[in-house]
Image 1 (cartoon, rainbow, N blue to C red):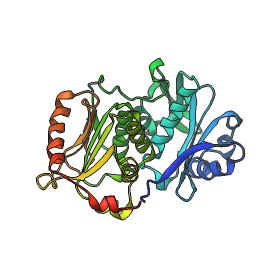
Image 2: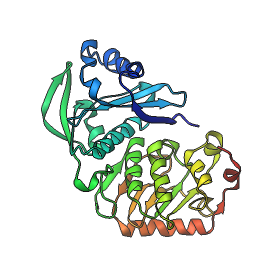
Image 3: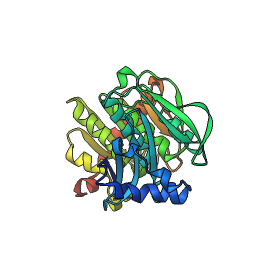
Image 4: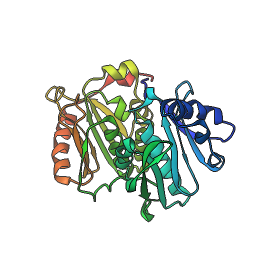
Length: 317
């Protein structure tokens, strides 16, 4: 499998303090110059800690949530940055906060990380201030009554805004948030299943929940080139093998095998689209039925002339 293989779980305090130390001290103390005495405080005793680990169970990232709604101590080891781990941690903390009835979250974001938190819905409040000699700004997130079980950046079928896609993380955030709200249909047209975007735990869990949501759920995937999947594996293919009655993968017909655009369609209203498969620049929208209908027509034509990918069917990933 690829480097994106990781799991996120609750870390026990103080039994697993050493695992958290292997992340927090290299990032905050060694890299950012935070005094060791400031890094560890009494809040750790009562905090809800999350720990991300790689396939070998080595710690790679962490974050914590306090009872007053403050998120903090979010740290990702350098080798795992820009892989979506930080986004997955943040979304997991927000969802945990919602599950225990916290209605307002806040954090002290380093100014260089404001854009990261803003993508997930945190808004800046007040002026920049210094903390451990590093400029910070307070950011807040209000959990609405109807959102107490999920973090929704926008509403599928309601929000007409266009969201630009520039990075792997942009794609991950919108693909996961949109799929979590999908009720019946998901169609993915992809060059190689974009492992950095679609082979990550939050998205796979969202697809699994969709597949099991209803007997009418249907997930269709058109894969142009299976080379990378065959070489490295892919959790979306594993899921398709387990849920073959709901998730189907085909190779598009000759007319579409080299089609340059890639897109994800959700129900009849949401999409992620980019004009070139190898270029991350694209757009996402949660409510544009006209455009989704146009992409759906192209997808259905490619699907009709497509064939099951027998090579993937033989894989035991």
